[in-house]
Image: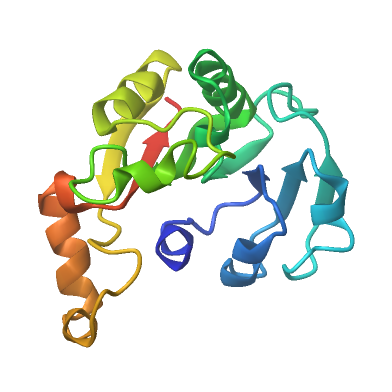
Length: 195
């Protein structure tokens, strides 16, 4: 989450699509106007773990209740994999629709192409995930939705540390390795721009 937050520009306002309990809002500068939307009203009320924000809206993220070109930044952090393949393009088109010209999308999802433990991301090991994506599949969906300037950002080569020695490798080195060798990356993080 911290890695994704570092990619957030200071342009405002921002919409967090599928915001959940809003944890990332704590990592976004307070001068960035933040609106979160999620289908689960409990996340937005009793389970909210984020900072005070400009708006928390319950609603359908496949039909966002915002006018076209309303936001400079849109977040889709670990959301797309919860939708079946045929609905994923609808989700990306909605994000595109609410972004203004030159608006930035930041999207993250498990990397189904990772060499080890990819099975942890898919049912039955993770029954909440409907359709996890391969790197090229996500890139093609972003292009199909109309996005340009699509760029992958390295996440990390591990999710959990199997031993203490791996913790000794600096995060920057692990992230650069993940950026260089996508098969080692555990989560995909992309930025894309609405032209």
